[in-house]
Amino acid sequence: DSGVTQTPKHLITATGQRVTLRCSPRSGDLSVYWYQQSLDQGLQFLIQYYNGEERAKGNILERFSAQQFPDLHSELNLSSLELGDSALYFCASSAPYWDNTQYFGPGTRLTVL
Amino acid sequence: DQQVKQNSPSLSVQEGRISILNCDYTNSMFDYFLWYKKYPAEGPTFLISISSIKDKNEDGRFTVFLNKSAKHLSLHIVPSQPGDSAVYFCAASGTTSGTYKYIFGTGTRLKVLA
Image (cartoon, rainbow over all chains, first blue to last red; front, side, top):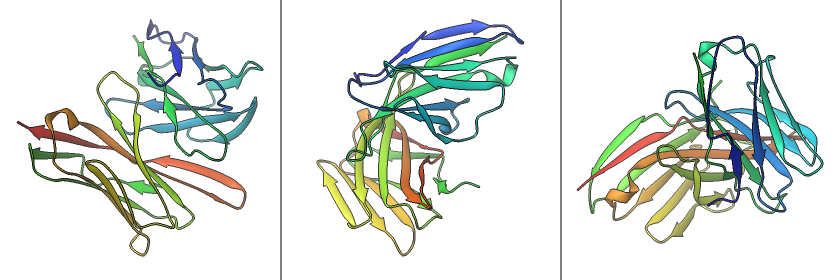
């Protein structure tokens, strides 16, 4: 158990809909990262937040957005969903500076029908 | 632009033999490298890491080698066990011009045959 929690575990929805994925980082970790993994592909970095502020942006579509709240949990919002958005979405957290390791949650499997 | 590459999508090794997984990177600003292991339906878990000031780091059956001049790192697993069967991702991190990057490779699926 990495200490990172993600909800829900599975999500099935229809094209055009909007969903919210939730992540709670390990206690004390200030950084949260979001990744997308499609069909056994690599981990595509989407976005990073550090202590509530956006820190880095990767290949995140304009239809997707994220935020990190004062209690450090984070949400990833996916809107106008398309079939190609079906994937595993992972959240990870890390301690600041002295530890480059990222601790991953179990992921949310999104299926868009 | 794939800055971190794992050119072998899969690898099969006999139990007890050595598994060697390779990773290449293109950006010399990366100064810390990590390997993660991923089982199906689980998130990746940290395995071993190496700083650019070292060329080797060992942890039990796992050793990571770094060749900075070739921009290449490798993970050696000796002896390989069936429980090592998983997807292995390398990752590279570093800061340039104030921008911090942390990039994963595409992964190598290791199958250890009993």
